[in-house]
Image (cartoon, rainbow, N blue to C red; front, top):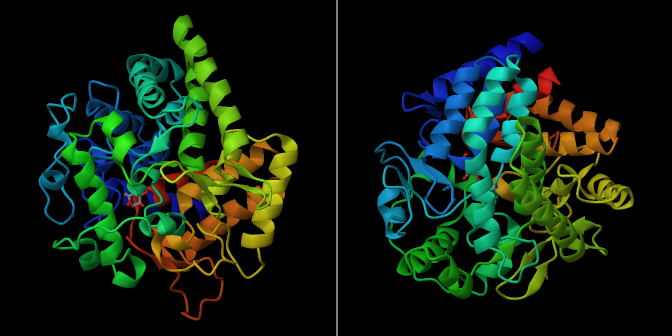
Length: 436
Ligand code: GLC
C-alpha cells in the first residue's frame, strides 16, 4: 500500500513537470512556478530524482531580483488559463526586477533555507549535494537580507507581508477585518480559477477586488518597498511567514557550518535569529488564546484568531517547552475532536470557519507536514503521529487534492478533497512523510 501510494505520488509530480525545469502546482488551476510550492516539491523529488530536485530550486533562484527578492510566481511561459497573469503584475516596473523572467511583484514564505537542508538530509550523494548548496546558498542568504533590510520598518525582527497572497494562506478569515478597512473599486475582470474549481471552494469576487487593489497601489509606486510600507492598506506580521524565515535562518547557519567559511554571514544570521525569535515570542503570542496570532501593522492591532499558522512556530523551535504545551492544548481543544482530521487551517469553533473553502477551514498537507515535524521536535509524538496518519488517510480516501474537509463524516460519501486535483505538494510531502 505504501509503495503504491509513493508510486502514485511520483506519477503526479512527473506529470506536472515542465520542460522549462520546474513543476506546476496543478494542471489548469496553477500553470506557472510558485515559490513555496517549488520548495516543498523539491523535497519530494529528492527521494527519487535528485537532478530534478536541484533543477526545481535552481530554476526558481534564477528568477531572483537584483535586490535579493524572490517572487511568488515566475511566469515561465504564456498561459491564459490563469488570472492575474504577467501582464497584470508587471514586475518590470521595479528597476531591480529580473530582466529575464516575468514574475509577480510579491513574494511567498521563505522556505528555501530549510529546503536546502532537507535536500542535504535526503540526498545519498552528500558530496554532490554540498556542491549544489555551495553554488546556491548565497542567493537564499541574499533573500533573507532583502527581508531584514526592507520589511522590518520598526526593527523588531519581524518582517511584514503586504499582500494576503504573500502569506500563502490566501483567503484566510484572518484577513476579513482588514478588508473591512478598505473600499476598493469594483474591478472588471475575468476569473479563471472558477473555470477549474467550483466557486464555492474559492474566494469571492469582492475578495478578489481587494486582492487586485493592493497590487494596483504597489504598481503605482513601481513596487517600491518604502512606498508600500507607507501606503499599502494591507501590512501584516504573519507568524507562519516569520516562522519560515526563522527556520530557514537556522538551516542557513547549519549549512554554512557544513561548507565552512562565511563567518560574517553567520554572525549576521545569529543576530537576525535572536531578534526574530524574541519578536515572535513577545509580539505575536496571545496568552488568552494560547496561540500565536497575526499582527495588523497598518491598523496597529493584533488579529486575534487561531489558524494552523498559529502553530507553525513549533516547526522553527520558537516557543519554549511550556508555551509549546499551551499551543498543543489549544490545538487539541479547538481542532482535535475525534470526529475531525488534523489540522484544519482555521479554528473549527469559530463562526468564520468553512470546511470547504480553501484557507477558511480545510486541511492542507504542507501545513500538516510542518506541524508533524514541529510536534516531533518537542516530543509530542502521539499528536505528531496522528497528523501524519490523518494526512495519509485523507489522500488515500480521495486522492492528491489541494485541500481536504477536516470532518470525518461530512455527509458526502467519500468526497473530502477539494480545489485542484493532482496537487504537487500534497504528492511531494506525502513521499517525505511515508519515508520518515
Ligand atoms: C494557492 C495557495 C498558495 C499556493 C498556490 C499554488 O494560491 O493558497 O499557497 O502557493 O495556490 O499552489
